[in-house]
Image 1 (cartoon, rainbow, N blue to C red):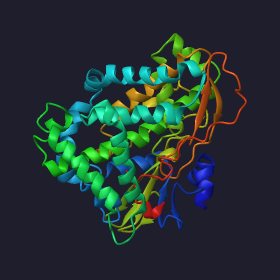
Image 2: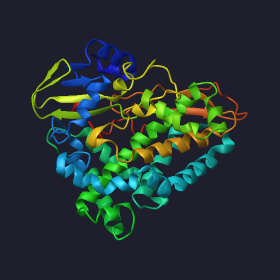
Image 3: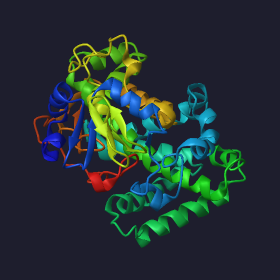
Image 4: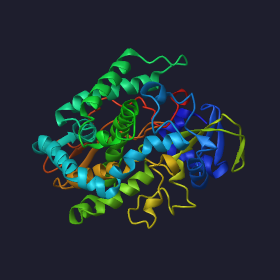
Length: 399
């Protein structure tokens, strides 16, 4: 299998693999690729046999051990303080009004223009601003958060076999640690977490939430808006019934999960489907492939917000590493869809095809509304932030 082909046309390549060999050895990955739903769930739920706690997992070398890079009892220690604050009711209470306000403020900046590139003007800024809010920083600190994020992502994706962490990433982690330390006395998310975690552990998990919340949420918003405008009448349905945005976002997550894969490492020789996986092997789970398994989702290549099993999609993984902040990410994407759909006669001008082996989203997405002229013009290229895949749940040496 050619990785370039997978990058360009993931659904077709993954369907071919799933139909012929749902657990396939891919030489270009030096590991196994899982494309069927049942095998994907089996891997993600069995953290004893398929672990994230492996020296090849470079994120831990940059940010330290966290809920992302540990399993078992240690993982429970890292994750437990964040479970209750990110339950749906708590997310709505703590962040609902702020996310709506931030989305409205961003739209007001370009409302009179009639046309905008959404990644740079809306999806990216919204995800960064919400992460700043989650970390207990002021909205004015969004640019600072983005700087930390960029330095850490560059270190994770560019790390060599020597494990050296570049100085910009070290400086970013030091700056983040300083901000975390200054805010630990407050009755906010990280301050509450510090009651059961060491300060070092709080900082590591704050870094994970920072770049996870930026990269995947930005992708969720762009993918959802792209699907919304690809389907005639959907935007009007959301305007008529704002709650319909929930189904649109959920089906978009199934069709094009922003995080396309998660990586695990086998801790023992094991039979997975028809494959003999050896101890130490990389096992990469394709969430994109599993989410289009016809054994679970009828007509899997059709965008259908009315399908009855929307919440069976695997975009947020399963098992002990299911995304702890998934309902905050959902909230952001739903608010984004509702806010943008309210623009009069919102329409798609140009969108780059979603790309990425690890995180999939369009590099740019241009929309217009009202009587905006020049809708046939080419889309703006957008910025290139995030084009390098920040490995939240993958080993960058296998990109």
